[in-house]
Length: 294
Ligand SMILES: [Zn+2]
Image (cartoon, rainbow, N blue to C red; front, side):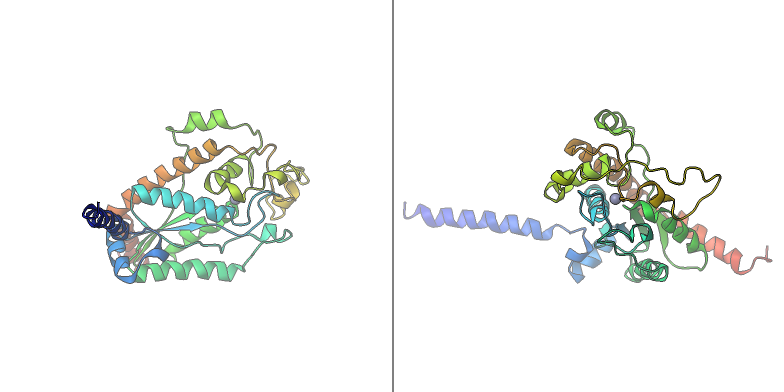
């Protein structure tokens, strides 16, 4: 026994060390976890692709955490990066959220700041070799802002490209997702979001508070003809909650994450080898700088 013990200890330690080495040699996709030397490898492995998962700090009904959108967009990014490697930018929470300023916990930065934060984040990523930037939006209130931000990339020439991820109905998961859904009205903090949070971090879903507020449409501006006005959301959902039913369905949450993550992985893969967007931008600016020259 005495002779076997050191050999056993040696074998055990070797196993532990090799397990640790295999963990250490794996390249993290979360930017904040990379060392500077590993960051160089990450930029190369990612083909210059970086995902910025955008969320916000705002009320999500009475039952979900303020950072729900941050959790959701990051989970989709992490899942995609495990299939198709890309660098994932840390938790990002500046965006458009004026419509929830009446609710506790909303952090609503000014227009100037939210614009500058995103613009300078893109510029800094590009300066660090991450020149193919994917905006992954987890927050409904950001939709117009991010589309306009992408359009505005044509205001001045730069050496990077910005693409807004736009997931579509995924035929692989469509039927199963539909069979699990119960809500007729499902929007902010509703069945889908509640299920996603329950899948990502169940302990953060306050199931006791689930039905403590109404998420029904109050239709207080439905007589406004042919018009859009900023108060439309408050007119409909003053509790910042839009759903008629919000059960917690872990499987539904998992499928929703997978559905988007697979499409995101497809976008990452495309962008890794793509040169067309940058070439078109260069061609455009060559002409835009001399519009009378043909
Ligand atoms: Zn949300």
